[in-house]
Length: 550
Image (tube, rainbow, N blue to C red):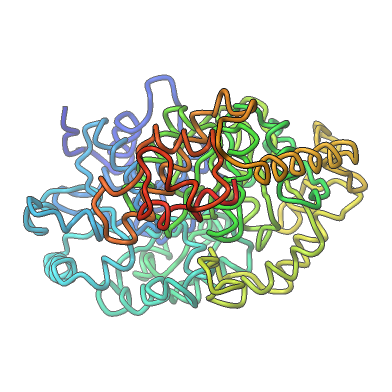
């Protein structure tokens, strides 16, 4: 059923919008209502609310309450994030659409102007908004007809973190707005910014930040002088989520030991493992697969179809662990994430808060585990200041927004002997009531994540694996009786990606059955792999390197 245009006073239209967007047993919060009312009055709004606090409702409700024929333009960083929100809106009968990149290159796609006609919310990326010719024409005509009600920048911290690096379109949004929609109100939404970040974003978009208290003091004069859209009303809230247990532990010396630590903690529970680079995400995933985890990898360097496949598998429960760069968290809306693990140092406390916000959104207990190694500061600093990775391979950074100060703050948080939640909330300018703290974190001196006995056991396993390889690969090993399905799928997807990179048809890849056979037999040389049924010399030369580290 299509949601009808809402009628009545602004307050009545907002109430009607809440009924469309919320389940029957849900209620709006005070901060959601305050933000929605400010938007309905024509003010620009900054939504600084924690992950899971309902930022989307605070801009979607005013979009539905807008006059008929006026769309709200939502600029978002990730296709997955847009897809989830648009799908949810459509299920509620709201006219919403996603237009971006590959989605608009389909042969059967209608003309863009036809697709956007009558839509209440239009989701797009900054690149598509600024660079697609059809989109630019639609924006120009919409501006002439006053057919856009508001522009929303979701995950607004990306303007600061990515605008100077690999997504410069974010900073170009400021010039675009000044040129096309100078008097149009703007909504900026983020879960992880400091007061100084808010001030910087206000300056970028030529807005004057005011608090709700200051706005009330101005009263009717704020509307009478026509300055509503130039005033940025800051609506923020940062509550302690008592169900989250924050843990910081020393990072094990080897990647295999780190994988064993993670596997023993998370078991088969829904988990996100955050990594600094694409290469690290790949390596950590492989290490987890080796110890029997159902793990997958997700980052921007993968083909879109593979990202969608991995996303669907994780959301459906076929994969329990996702190893990802920071972009994955912003595209995911899953309530039952029980573990968020940082395999390496996050680039800032803002990033850390954003990422742990994905844990325990259903209100049940969840663990946020950060594996800390002092040496990671050097690596994170290099990634934070260089666009390229640390080598000539695919180790590209996920963000350019960190600084030496940011990393020192993260290190201080990790090394703190006191309450880490107090350190984190103080960073964002919020008081934290230590007396009310559930004290379920591992605050205090930094502890080890793995015992020396486990380290020795891990080294023994690695030694046995090497001996097995030296002994030849003519037959299946005793340990190969049950290769985990997740392990087979991981290597199968690696083969498919390599085949696609080489421009080969799918038939030139390896089937899952052949992949399983290779994993069971573990051929130590390319010639022995070529001798296996279904492989041959050509396939062995292409794919042997994928299996050589197994």
